[in-house]
Image 1 (cartoon, rainbow, N blue to C red):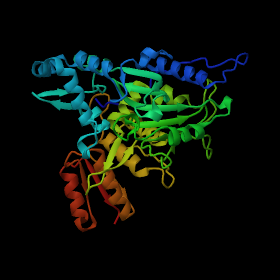
Image 2: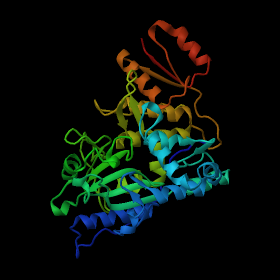
Image 3: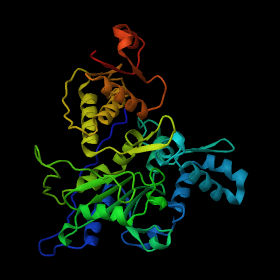
Image 4: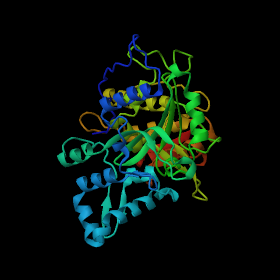
Length: 417
């Protein structure tokens, strides 16, 4: 059965009362943390014990990480323990840190979370478990539920002299590995999202391991109670932040009013809920590399409109089957190639409630030659398995398209020419 994201039931959280308005940044953090707690994250409040096992030089919660691995993979741990003895923890952490370095397509935090790491003698470790396709395997389900989701506030991360006392408002850890950082501002103090963006650009050094692209945190969110922006590659003043908003009305920017609280609570109530975040890591987040130099070019995290469109289309196609028509509007520069690529791969593997494939083949037809080349490259980069994507060029003609269809190609790209 397809691993389709299902949102958790909404939880109502009381934010503030008119008799006692909450006007500090800490108050906003308290409310955000409370919603994370209702969504399934382990929270600690401002308790210093939350970061007691955080190693600044490694940018990992070491005890949490080792505890998860030993709990879920005792047989694999026994293999390396038999070889390394009292140095097992040290050797495991060293191996993991080596793999968290993005040397071409093999390393980096996104790849490690998806595929795990290998160690001699023949041990293979998972660093997280995604939701199994069905609930028929109780062991797989138990490992999935063993994932550790932790929220740490005011994390002191610095290793350099100027950063020793600096802290970031919120960090989300998945099995001891930081995956999301957040800077929060309370509008009632006169601070807004743009101030959080400025803080990332001026006070968060990209030389710190926590903030290095694709080494630790995958994405950084700057937000207040009304708007959200995100960045995947911090580079001081050159850091490029994108809106992560729902939109407000037909042509409005930002987010619509929320009768139950903050306008931005969809981020920490729904998008960053454990099931949703795991789904994003497994099926959306990706890293682009230069094909010639193999240098890392981009770390891609879906924007709200992309995630929303793909999930709605997949859910509807799963319920109604093939034969439906949809219209998705994208403005220029809003990432339509990525949206199409994510949707194609989701539909290619989509199964209905009876575990039957919904589509035999996904065919993508464009009316521009340059868009076809860009799309093919993007779709290929989503999943590197050979033979999944077949590109039909003009010189292949209709015979090439017919051959691809008859061969059972999973995804086919072509142009109307």
